[in-house]
Structures are given as structure tokens and as C-alpha cells.
Length: 206
Ligand SMILES: [Zn+2]
Figure (tube, protein in one colour):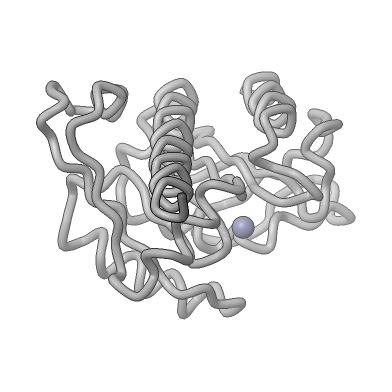
């Protein structure tokens, strides 16, 4: 499992989704424990030793107390606690996700429909699906942010992800592979939407 998270970290860094020590990645070890990236680590050179074990009930249980878990660990832990089916949570800070989150923050959500790529999301069988991605205001207080996220999640079990305004994307899956697929599909869709909007703006200016 450490290998898989380290591999994802290097891959997402290379794709430009996790630059400058941003992003964090976690996976469930057993019903009560997760592994999560340590705080402030460069995701392009992440190592096995940069992953910290967390007890979902009691907090940090790493044997090495010198390693601090990610600042956003609380939000990850709350997602695992709320939904026992979640096996992995991945969080990226991409350019396109950031642009889109700012543009649509006033509406509190963004919707995709008609894209074949939507079928990469768990349970989606047709491009005719409408995927809603809530957008929450950013907050350095993880307890406050988690409260808003969990309340929205409790209302819609169909949700696959959410964006935080000018911050980044959170998605999850039953395992690391599914969560990775979700990140790749969503980042693809964010890029499509941003490029489309940019092209339309350029057309208008001509
Ligand atoms: Zn973040």
C-alpha cells in the first residue's frame, strides 16, 4: 500500500497536480486506521517513510512522532469515519481545478454532463449522467470545513468529489485504484471545461 501511495504521489507531481508540497494522499489500512502523507513533503520525491499511520479514533499513532501528518488529516479522517466503504482519499491542487473552483464558487457547485469520461466515476454507466461537484469556501480551520463537507455528503451519497475554492479537489474510492481513476477523470474534465471557456472568450474577442 505504501508503494501505491508513493507511486501516485510521484505521478501526480509529474502531471503538475501536486506541486510545491501541496496535496495529500491517504488509504485505509483496516477499519480503524489509515496511512497519510506527512506534512510539508515534496510529492515528487516522497518516500515510504513520509507516510504516517493514523488511528481514526485516537489521532496520530506513528511510531515516529517526529513526522507530522498532513494539515488536512482531520478532513481525510472525517471522510473515512463517515463512510466505511471509503478505502482511499486523494487530494490535488491543479491549475484547472483551481480556476474552475474560483469561477463557480459563487454558485456553490459545478456540473458536468455529456462527457464519455464521466463513466470513469463509480456507478456512472452513461455519458448522459449529470455529475454535481460542490464547491466549498476555503478555510484553515479543518473542523469547520469538515462540518460543511460532511453535511453535504450526508445529503447526497451519489457525490464522488468536491472542490475547495482556489484550493483543490478531493475525491475518494473503495480502493487506491478507484480514487486514482476519479482524480484522472475529474482533472481531465476540469481541463476540458477551462480550455473550452478560454477558446470561447478568444472567439468573442476576435
Ligand atoms: Zn490542500
